[in-house]
Length: 196
Length: 205
Image 1 (cartoon, each protein chain N blue to C red):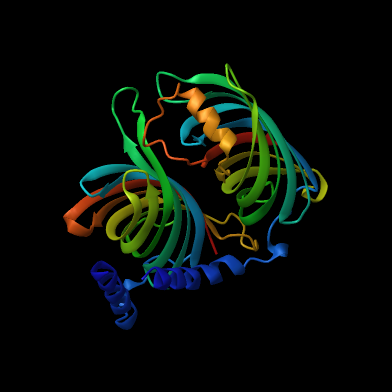
Image 2: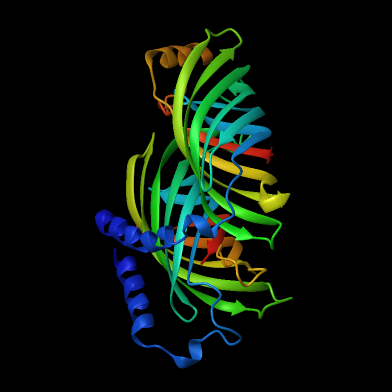
């Protein structure tokens, strides 16, 4: 909860103190929002155990000011424990839901290459809630906070008069997840989004 | 806090999901056929059950909605690692697909995002086990790359990749199958889950 409050405070600060230098240098933004999906996996600590996760996620993102964006995500995830012998076999299996709310900012981005491609590196900070069920843990209901990086490129529309999505963005992202009791996990995902 | 997160999520999601009208996107073909390969990794009464095999789908509808019927067979395995029972899974289903977003590749193609919901029935046929049937339902997300041909883009062909989450009910029959499959010594942590992940890859014509 404390992490979420900090995230919200950071987000409100970004909106309240606009900095004229924060504008993207080359052109106005190519899109105001994104909608997409992602596959991912990682490790989620819980009560001293290292639980493996795999998830399918939907994500939406809104530009709030300059390079600052706010995003929300929903993940359906599988969560469980694996043995390394034999064959990385599953010991337990559960499933559940994870929601995330985050702020994201472009850390680096190129100008348009060939008029239609722009590479980017984003940093992000957020928090969320995991609600899952796993045989040994029972019901897992825990908040978390995370920090991460998101890398990819924007494929910008090829013709000016289209009314379809203005950009298409493949992405890879990596997050470090902080749980209560100073436990840490990680998440790696690949996905793609459509921008309007 | 869960309620607050849900409300915040809905607030963020609602404008992003609502602002693309039907006319903005290149319509889906009125009729299409998809030939591909599907795989799944899930649970049957808590036991690992996975496999892959060919799939066929027939779809109708436009501009952004498709209704489809699908069928396929998969070579599958059931049970714990090192003691798996091989078999076959025959599955048929129906569903609906929504063209959520589209990025146009000039006048000749597009990269699309699709959301879908489906339901189906699977018939399992494992060695040394009684045959049994299990219904399922679920939702999925995917993308496809389409190419347009002919007048007014009426002919289309493309490649589609789909990821699905599926759920199935448990039953006494499944519990009985589970006990036979693991020779009466099922892992105590096996649980009773009947959910899993389906993935599909196919050519759309």
